[in-house]
Image 1 (cartoon, helix red, strand yellow):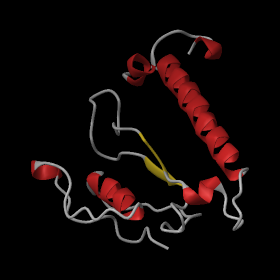
Image 2 (cartoon, one colour; image 1 turned 180 degrees about the vertical axis):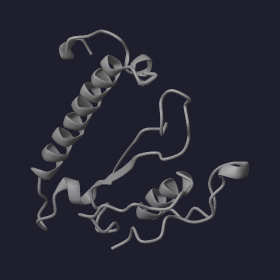
Image 3 (tube, one colour; image 1 turned 30 degrees about the vertical axis):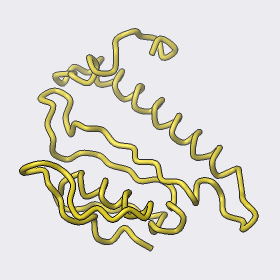
Image 4 (cartoon, helix red, strand yellow; image 1 turned 135 degrees about the horizontal axis):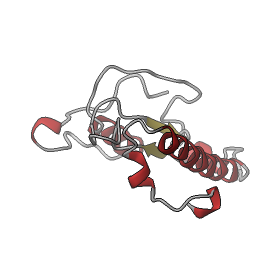
Amino acid sequence: MPWLGFTEPLHQVSHNFGNAVALDKYAKMSTWIAGQVAHLMARLAAVTDASGQTLLDQTVIYWFNRHGDGNPHSNYALPNVLLGGAGGYFKTGRFLQLPATSPTKVLISIANAMGVDVPSFGKDAFTATSGLSGLTA
């Protein structure tokens, strides 16, 4: 991201080993990415259909980081964000701090929002058999 003043790739910077300079770069990269997501949301929110719904109301964006901590590539404490209402399927405007769960439950929830019944998803220990409770409107 040379427009931020440095050229190291995001993946490399995510392996920061507690280095303050790398952590600062990672924060700047993450902030820029968040700004891009916000820009997309604003563009979707600016377009309305005949019923007054916006494209953002009709859309779901799943934004996540597949590592809780970039140093060891840990798969716990994964930040996940669902944006948009998926046509009214998801209750919006909330922050949920959920107990440890499989991210495949989020994918099942998204499939269900699109009208696809997914009885299970994933493999072995990562198999989920339902979406996340408390997401629907």
